Length: 94
Length: 519
Image 1 (cartoon, helix red, strand yellow):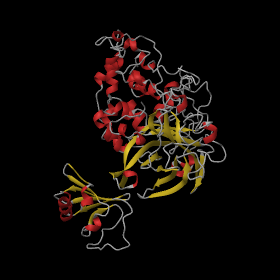
Image 2: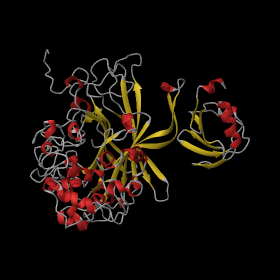
Image 3: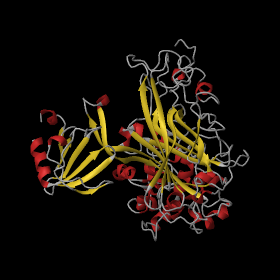
Image 4: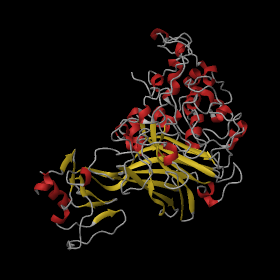
């Protein structure tokens, strides 16, 4: 996580993580509460060798208590609600 | 200024700062409409070595509402790509940038070069969109540096054959001509005076601080933007390709005769300063609007400072709700009677007594009772035929329901080409083809809006109101009169697309510097 620390900043009560490569190091994302155009990813979906990041993948924890997270990738924004992931990101950024 | 640096946040982001918007039936091709959106304000022509350019990470757009609901039916997106042809060099160019070549051309002298993609997005009624790429790798001309670097600028870069920044397109059933690049600023106003407590050089003897400051009557106006450049996005497209139903309207009262136009700039939601990324910068997420512009001077003169940044982020339909009171009861209308008095002293008798009395008895900010319904009609709803018919002018509302700041153009109105009938005051000057029926490059929109706020347009909606005499006389003293379409020869407008003049050369800046001077 040493590389992560350079890219973390906290604004007010929100937590933004610019995470090129970060998500692959975390447990698979739970179901999205809403998405722009895609269906929610399956739980415990593994990262395959074919998966790769083509640009920044950014997680913005907008509410730590409810676990609301905005994910930004390409020109999309995906909204998640996952308190456990929000807590894990919070502690990783401390 | 029309919309140059008009809000705190966008003033720090000039590549995304929209400055002016024009929409008019092309005088030399009346079956087409010309749309021009300008960005990057107040460019010093000699502002090298990194001369002005569009931003690769901004999505520029010109939007058209053709059914009066306040939302875009057609959007034209411009996305830019910048390359360094000679990346090891610190120079913009190594020699004359001629001929006008494409990026990567072997032996080119031109280092820093831009191209762009033009996309038409049709917003369908089912909520989906249909995108058509109208052009890819379209050429942007260099900035006008000087006779050694960019010789014979107009002939070299706006040539009628070969590589040219004037480019035609034909794709998906759509045709037109497009230009993106540097042009001479076309908007004219006296910035120094108006930003000095609302001064008007021709009328400083009436300003409450004028005589005490030694200012006199009848001083000539200063065209503050006469020698600066902007970057323009210009389109010329068939009328039938913009209006609802795809058929050119037969009359100015046809249900599809009016289009509403605005421009916007958007950036991706997340911006990352990443030392490991490309050029130290990356972006992610959906595009969000950071700048918009419909009618001139709206955010500049009407919206309160605390709301200006928010206004830039909102869609035009928010004007009928969130921002309505700024249009309904503008502060500027209250200030004029207090700022201008008969003896030029604070507390003296105002030269706008009728406006002052009207203001005192009309303070409404609701849609049912707005204090200034004339300004609502001009800027937010469009003006119905019941009002414009008396002016001999076409309506700018033919049934639209939305309250939204859009530059509304009645495309069935023929352009005025007789110079004895053209007026840079548009409707106020009896010219049915000028502002607020769209906006031509030479329209004196600052004077028109000043006079409107001063009460000149109130009788259109309140026949009992008699405008004060100064409401029909105040101006910025920059033109020689209503028939002047050149601002006393300072603007260099062209008779054909892209209509805005050749950009000022850096070598000739300041523009009055004698080329051979040894001083």
